[in-house]
Every structure is written in structure tokens, then in C-alpha cells.
Amino acid sequence: MILDPFQYGLGAFSGGLVGFTLGLVGGGGSILAVPLMVYLVGVSSPHVAIGTSALAVAANAAAGLLNHARAGTVKWRCALMYAGAGVAGAFAGSTVGKAFDGQKLLFLFAIVMLVVGVLMLRGRGEVGNPGAQCNREKAPKVVGYGLGTGLFSGFFGIGGGFLIVPGLVASTGMPILNAIGSSLVAVTAFGLTTALNYAFSGLIDWPLAAVFILGGLVGSFGGALAAKKLSGTTGLLTTVFSVLIFIVAAYMLWKSAGAFFGTTLKA
Image (cartoon, rainbow, N blue to C red; front, side):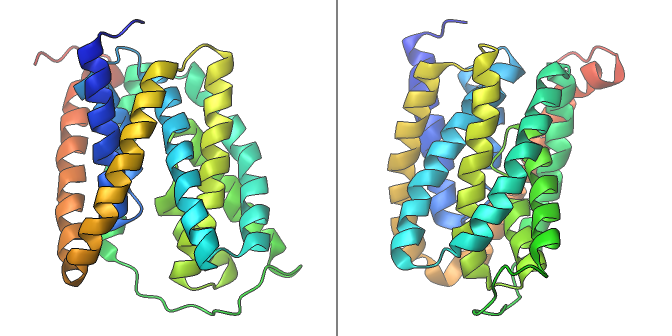
């Protein structure tokens, strides 16, 4: 599928929007990548939108990982153990996702967005143990959580940070800040695995991915600056963003419900 210059411009804008929300409110912003590509940019194939967004999300996560690595907030042993198990899940999930009807996949994706919105509203209240380590005793739990979230991430072509962060906290007991930094290793690995799987089937628009990534880098910088100025209203920002997710999810459910239930809905 060939897009026109205006659509690529919308792709850069969409990437900037996703990057800005990630920088402003943290995890969850990448959930908007697929609906933006489908409904704003106009990518006709849901599978191409998923494959392209997976690559873009992986690139943006890698950029964020560099910042966390410099800050020393990444627990590398836990992160690599979690990501290693999740890569197998991401490959299996993305293989199943490619074979799934595109419009039905969008319907299920919208339901996932509703779950993301609820999880973001619940907030992050656990302090955690700064000295948490991934030893042999914790290894089965870490691997299990990694495999499960990788499968989910691969199927929907999303970073899955909203699941990976609580998964790391639950399986290791680490503080939320370490979980956020460490999760980016898994988000990068899962996104690349899914993107490569889709690329082998020709389901990535490479120019669109490039402009989306560039837009995301610019947007994340702006979002980070805005977050510093609005640091006292983080809870309000998260609530507003969650409401936005609910609205987008409702629109996706309406547009894709006909395909999921075997009927035709007119706009």
C-alpha cells in the first residue's frame, strides 16, 4: 500500500502525539499507535498498522531505555530474564495475530484499551524492595510472567508496558521506578520480535515507521519537558489520558463490531 505525502505527515504527527503522551504520563501512550495509524493516517490493513507500530514502539522504548540505563534504574538480570522468556511468547502471539482477521483484531484491541484505561486509573501505590533480585527462587515466576505478557504483546503488536511493569513488580518485588526502567528492555525486545515476524510477511510500511519514530522522538522530548512543569498534576493528567483512551476505544468498538459479530455497521 502506497501512502501520499499528507498521510506520511499525519504519521509523523501521530508519532509525535504518542511520544508526547509517553513523556507526559509514562506507560500506556503506545496503545494509541495502532488506532492512530488506522483511523487518522488511513492505513487500510490492520495487520500493516500493527506491524509498523510494533517497530515504532520498539524504537521509542529503546530510546527511553538509554535514559533509564544512564540513571541506573534498570535491574538488568531481572529485565533480561523477563524479556528472554517473553520473546518466545511474543513470537507465538504475533504469529497467531497475523492469521487473525484484521477487523476482529481491532475489536479485541479496543477491549484491551479499556483495560489499559482502568489500570492507569488505579495508579501505582506500591513502594517495593530496592534490593530485590532475580534469584533461582523467583526465576519460575519471572519467566512465567514474561512468557504471558510477551504472548499478549505479540498478539496485539503493542509494547505491553502497562502489563510488564506490574508483572515485574509482582514477580520480583522491585520498586515501581526500577520496574519502569527494566520494563523497557522487554518492551524493546517484544516489539522487535513482533516487528520482525510481521516484516517477514511484508506487513510493515518502512517509510511510515521511520516518520512515526522521528515524530515520537521529538514528541517524547516535549512531553518530558511538559511533565516537569506539570509535575504536581500527574494524577489529573493520567485521568485525562485514561478518558481519552476510553473515547478512542469506544470509537474502535463501534467501527469494528460489525466485523467481529458478522454484521455490517454503517458510519
